[in-house]
Amino acid sequence: MDTLKGKVAYITGGSKGIGFGVAQKLLQEGLKVAISGRSEEAIQNAAEKLSAFGEVLGVTSDVTQPEDELHVVNEILKKWGKLDVVLANAGVGHFAPVDELSYEDWQAMIRTNLDGVFYTLKASVEALKQSRGYYITLASLAGTNFFPTAAGYNATKFGVVGFTQAAMLDLRKYDIKVSTIMPGSVATHFNNNEPSEKDAWKIQPEDIGELVIDLLKMHPRTLPSKIEVRPSRPDKK
Picture 1 (spheres, rainbow, N blue to C red):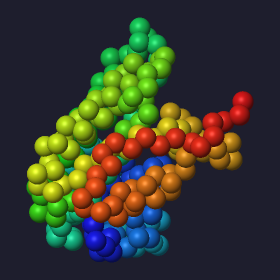
Picture 2 (tube, rainbow, N blue to C red; picture 1 turned 90 degrees about the vertical axis):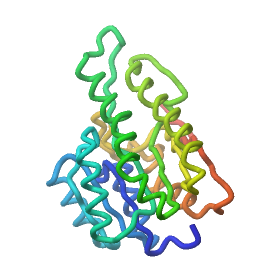
Picture 3 (cartoon, rainbow, N blue to C red; picture 1 turned 120 degrees about the vertical axis):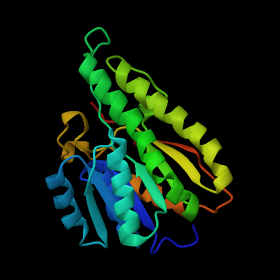
Picture 4 (tube, helix red, strand yellow; picture 1 turned 180 degrees about the vertical axis):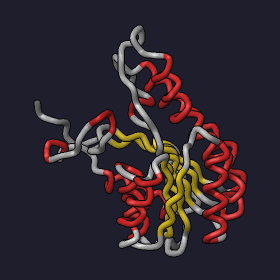
């Protein structure tokens, strides 16, 4: 994209963590940003904080509901008339040995991590065709590295990577760029973590924001379609 100022971005799961960090960085770069999440209170609180950095729209949405995502995109188009960038960030993780993993936790991950990524793309793809925009998914190193207690999480993140790479091939004929970002350990509230000084060694949410900006500024002829990112040095235990 020649210039980012005035572009419009939409981030799912934007009330905290990576979504919030990316939103802040994009606003500082001059984009207008819409964020969504399931909790109206959390989304409005986040939008209020982010408004210190630029123009923000907060909309309540559950990514497992296709009509919710269509509603968000309609609200974005109503307010700003276009949509240039989408970050499908919303995700959940439940960890247990596969023989102990509950049906409910399995279904929650499938519906949020896989269905949600598809529903967000379906809701936004026509707008992205018009803007020749960018669709980015937030996967994980768990999308290529499997580990114990993560059968469900691995399954969904492997799926996100495969989905995104196939979508990239489908959509590039419309000059839509599609990439997936695969972070390792990030200092967020994921999996009931409470970010603190002990997480200083981890990737920070704003680091992912800087990576998204780098992708958006990449020359139109070049597409980094799958990006692995990890802490420079692992925690010393």
